[in-house]
Length: 227
Ligand code: SF4
Image (cartoon, rainbow, N blue to C red; front, side):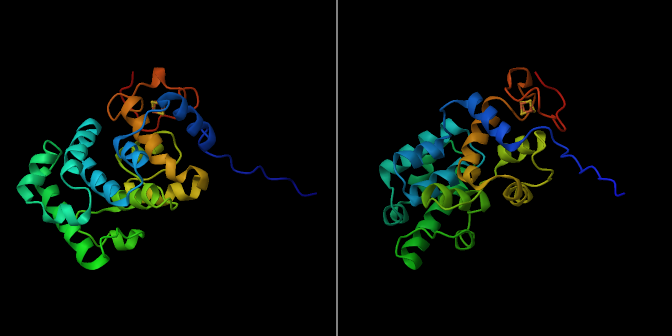
């Protein structure tokens, strides 16, 4: 007689569906600045610019810097003609504003010259632009073109690992690991959900576990001090 072997149980007690439901409850309808910009107008160029501005920059600063810059220029033609000093002044105090001002001007010039002012809609092409990494490329194709992708930033990487949904050491690994565990219906919205959740609840230092809807089921992997 053959004995039935017990299938290996999933090491995490927190399912993807439960995690998404709990995080949605925690953040309500609030959205990160780039998503707000995308909702106001689905324009891949504005999304590209505001995502570049958002790197290493607080959300409120990204929103204000984007607004100031878009008043002066919100097309590749217009931005390519702005002097770098004017761009710098508009986007200050975004992190690395001097480098970003130069990158934005160069990106705009190349879009005009090589792409007839249209932002490419593939990750591979976007990655050929200086100053554009996987995070930026993913937000452009997901929020700008509605294509499937998972944008992984520091919040997505940290919280997904703490919850045990993935076990990775770098954001790029997290992107591909999440593709294996997340149903496609969650891909596009996962970034904006996790960014707000990471800012509001699952904070980098001392997360607010006692107030988190997932507290009972979350394995809290590598979480030290918590509140
Ligand atoms: S680590 Fe804490 S705050 Fe983060 S998801 Fe788990 S219970 Fe929530």
